[in-house]
Amino acid sequence: LYISENLRIEELARYFEYNEKYLTTFFKKMNGVPLKQYILKEKIEYAKSILTESNTTVSEVAFSIGFSDVHNFSNAFKNITGMAPGVYRKQYDQHSLFDK
Image (tube, rainbow, N blue to C red; front, side, top):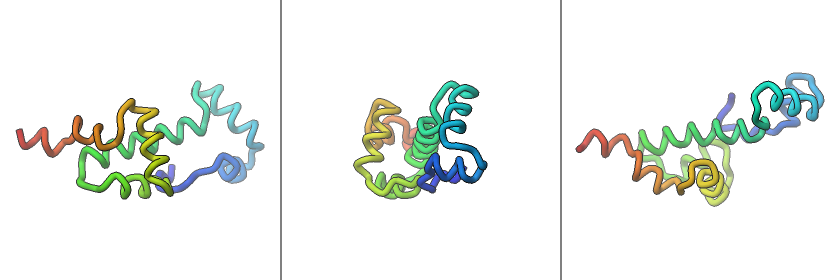
């Protein structure tokens, strides 16, 4: 998975030489979650690790996982984790855990 890419279902379908509808239906049947949602969750998981293991800004994290807008990233992050990226960082920051 190219986490920094803005992956589109149509491109994945073309790559695997499947119809979009078939690919999305098959993926959901096999994994229980829509492909688009799976990709987004994987990106957010990666973002969580960057936020807690580095001092990278929220904007840089957003751009590094393929978001072109930090606002959209923050909304997606909050929808999945229940908290804003900055709040998540403060709560789970690995650096501050080691400093205590």
